[in-house]
Image (cartoon, rainbow, N blue to C red; front, side, top):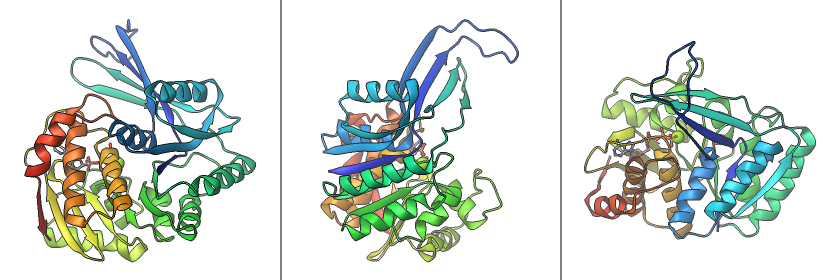
Length: 314
Ligand SMILES: Nc1ncnc2c1ncn2[C@@H]1O[C@H](COP(=O)(O)OP(=O)(O)OP(=O)(O)O)[C@@H](O)[C@H]1O
Ligand SMILES: [Mg+2]
């Protein structure tokens, strides 16, 4: 199975209001809640595709129980380690025009809880063929936490996909993940660590290639840079490719990168040749844009786009 690691999951709450007015009081028309966190989105997409998957990570308190219950209701197999502090919530207030987000800080993880997670992870590696490590690290998890997990996976012969940002990405890359999946802003922050992740101005094709090479210089064996509606740029030991969706989809792009990681993890498991793997990743992540929430994909869009994705040598 594919093991997904979510060390800083969340209960995602969406409040729907008519119009968001700063300093005002709002009647909330509808409240939606779902299990949040990038690794949980990866697990949900794989589960929806019928792929064997197990979600692990850290959950705490009543909010952690709620996340576990929502995952169980979706039928996503899970094996989380309990922590004492409370799992965070993320609140999005959506009105007619747009959404405004409030991200709680992650829970504090003790050294003992981290050690317990590492021991659990080692056990779970016995059943895994690929591990996807996604998202931020909560306070208390060492900044090289992903690096430690990647080394344990490699020692167990399990391939790894790393999708994180900032210092966690830089340290994780040093452990040599089989694949890293930064988006353009995360790649920009890796190139200029002092700069906070921000939209990156359009670069020339040569510059994009040079930038992506830096991820390999940091230690990854392959990199897939996701570039929003422009698709992906992949640099691997077997070659370099662009994968471009046949159309730009309107919808909800949050979680498109997680669907991309789901497809890449499945492709690594199956040792799918890169061009076919990239076409699958581009079609599936576009299908995530077409589906309303993160962690979901629109099957019709996936099957319609898959034969039309253009993959060309870069
Ligand atoms: N509007 C779109 N139309 C078609 N495909 C898209 C669109 N937006 C994104 N994609 C596809 O989804 C992939 C991942 O998107 P993106 O680069 O935004 O990931 P991300 O920033 O990591 O997202 P997240 O972290 O929210 O999951 C892109 O490489 C592209 O193939
Ligand atoms: Mg992402």
